[in-house]
Image 1 (cartoon, one colour):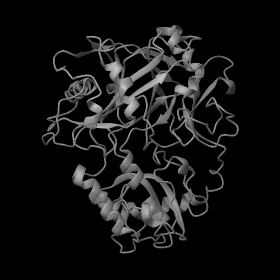
Image 2 (cartoon, helix red, strand yellow):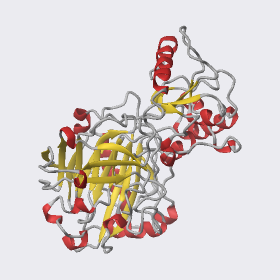
Image 3 (tube, helix red, strand yellow):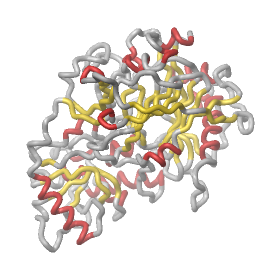
Image 4 (tube, helix red, strand yellow):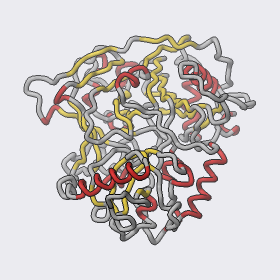
Length: 491
């Protein structure tokens, strides 16, 4: 999807092993929630009431104080982030990375936040039922290639009432909204009828679930309206992120991801959507060899795996990579003056914690019409190219893309990286993605395979933690072996 309005990436990249007690998680600026203050336990929630004994991908910690490694294995060794911060504060705790695990703290009777955690879990279960958060993402190239497609919407929706309704909607709210597949009896707005059509179209492409669709199947949707009159592309950018249930991530630091993410362009021009073959559970050190770039074209609709890393980076080089955009801002390409997109995430039996559009706002939008059978999605070509780099390519031929943070390029007001959102990369500290500057894209939707040294990478700017904490790796790996032998947990 091309943007989340204020969506913070969770602790989503597997890091090198290091001592948590000595150096709190360097992903803290991207965590939801960040490391907690033991003196303020109100927002700390153990993940066990939601996951129970189902191994679930999450930030996993090992407490060597409570259970030192032994030849016979150990129990109460895996703890979630909240319990590492609260229940095991002051202990010898090590961060083990993103792993399929469950927290042992409550079952061992030492959890200090179990009451608040059980209460918070019930709030989610009242909406989603007794379902464990899932990650549908696989960065396997064959799978994700199947789930990235481009379409053209017929008949044209860019000339309908929907673009005007999008402009109206953002004057009321920029939140995401829920549209259930079943049980909705309220007359829909024009935007919602298109959302409903997108939902039913893509549900037909997914495997039929073993149980009937219920109230947890539907669409999460919102719109983006970005002015293109500002000469600085970074002002209209959306930094890199993973789509997820934001409330769940903020409360439990767990990821619940949509099955599919989609972008529908209602105008042409502006920065492209960029999608990387990397999901939140992939190792930070993993090469990213496939990137797809989609430039806004009226009535274009793209769909991709809902767990993949993506955004609308504010790198001006992207406007030069495709010839029709070369050296121009978006409004010079089309004359629209704004970049309007409709974002729809498809959730199958595992909905996020969001509400339907309020009736008072719906009344200000255009009236809905039945689009079933009237609006179709015709698959269009995705250009293919291979990038092996160019002769003489060096450090100056690299693009740096930031993750969503409190200083994101798209947040109004002052930016921590400078007024234009660019700033001095030497001074920036945090997680970034670096990839070569690509030239000569062959189509407005292009898949680029980055070969060899041209692969994209995740990099910690201004963060030299890896050498300092290498000594912990052997101890943690031995503990992992003991856990797998004694409990069957997958780490």
